[in-house]
Image (cartoon, rainbow, N blue to C red):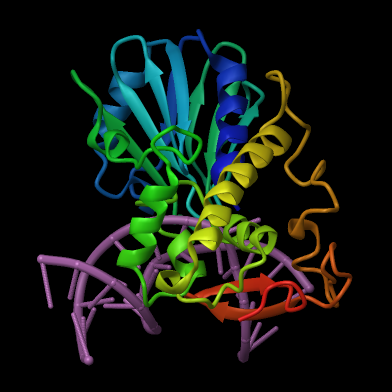
Length: 274
DNA sequence: GTGCTTGTTGGCCA
DNA sequence: GTGGCCAACAAGCA
């Protein structure tokens, strides 16, 4: 599930439940795949007893910073989620990491374990945080930057290129389809053969979709929507893409599905021509 | 049982 | 070396 805006949604959940709170206990299963490459002993030792100071989200990653300089990195993979549960929460089967404070339990849950828990201690920013590409909503995400990237990936379908985190950080499968649908560009088009006008549209729609997804899904004014699946307007492709016999909200014509760039892709043939 | 799944990585090949 | 494709990772769901 988690792409840019869902990641921000989950970050706020933990943040609102525990910012400023002291972590009294850490529960984790060291052998879980989400900890691959991470020193769980150091993680548990450093985080226990310190306060959660702040947090940020970038692309599909989050960083939680603690008063003693420790930093916890989370990636939700395909099926990860964060929950703020009651203090008495007992870790369930897929609750790989739980941070307890005096008033809540911060749960990292991930059945498929494609997600990841990272840890950093020391001066400077962790590598896994520093290396994230400049955000799509930052000034660094320019038409020129997009154009040169598309040129370099000229033979790949545009759908596959939009999924590349090195240039489109935070875009996932549904956001990529949403961008192309709004841009009226067929997902199978080769990235290097789009016109300058089409590249400008892709650039603009990337920013639009990110902005709207953050506003709608991550919540406004610091207030969180109760869950992730409500509040998505019906004029988005999102609400129609998996419905059997789903139709394009703009043309009212049937949607099409196929594997493009290795991922299930949905588009509106009446609107997005090859 | 079968065949899917909103992510990422590493290996293979041109 | 670069770019493109795909299997693998693991578990749940219809």
